[in-house]
Length: 428
Image 1: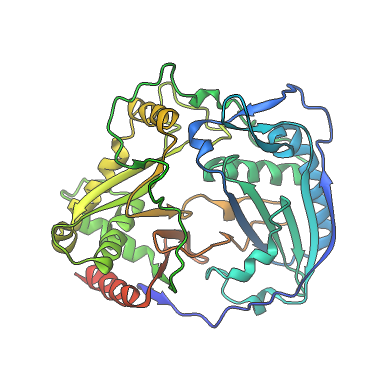
Image 2: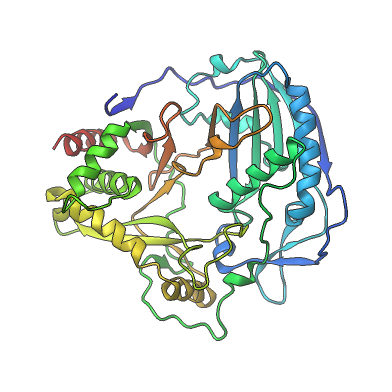
């Protein structure tokens, strides 16, 4: 299958969800290393907003939704022993002026609900439906919703200050293992002092990817009317872009770098055709293996920093794609141990946030749909999306893990240009 703009029937707006019961779940035993509060790094500090994910499952004869809900609730009580901070509450330390987690054991919320709909009636799970927010409870942490067909959804709401995508995947692996009566798959590493700023802080690089607190952040939602479309790149499309980006036969091009370069030129040129205008793209880089010594793979906090790449309108228009892919790769390579430490120290001084023209946020290879629960892997996993024109989202495909769906939200005229450019550059 080639590239396509994913056309779907209008999404179902009312999922007819009824809450059956709700409660707080507490750690089922005393935490071994009891602490009053958890330090949050400068990366955690700027991510004080909720991330909501929904994980859809087909019906399973041996695991009706009621049984699943009981197993998840039991597993949640067990997992809060190792992830004690999830039973705590975010608070501002009046002395330091920093956010931290009060590990007070106040509990994690758990809700069971039912829907009068079937999974088939919901329609295309890949298309981010605003109604999916009904499958998550903002004020509590976990919601299990059963559907009329016997399928069900698990909705989870967490502050981004607690997890990044990689550590959340580890959390899900552990939750699934405990739900199956097994021990933790991975022992979480909760000490976030590993990413504390140096004393005194030493900013040894310029950081144009970060802006002062008063500048307009890339995370601001727009009040404009936006068209929303999903552009699918098949595995063969991705391979074609990678081949075009090779400067020699032995070059190794990542799928992320290739896709990011392609959508970068489409997004930037749909906004402005000025050949001299400099476009700055932002994207996340996992710093766990880049630090010296490397962070433990099971580090629970946020261990991604914002990388950036620049190009003029002329470079984006005329290419070649190999040059743009190299710019994206260069931004990732820039993220050395010292650069990462410098960025963290910059945050200690300026309390700044990512700053650029737009951000590419990738859920493509996080593997949430590969988590093996006793009742099987999810049919599909996705975040609850609130459309923003300055954030492009990469989602896995429901049928082919090597294909990718690009979620774009733009004013209608810019969307028309984006779609033309998307196909033009792909066929060039």
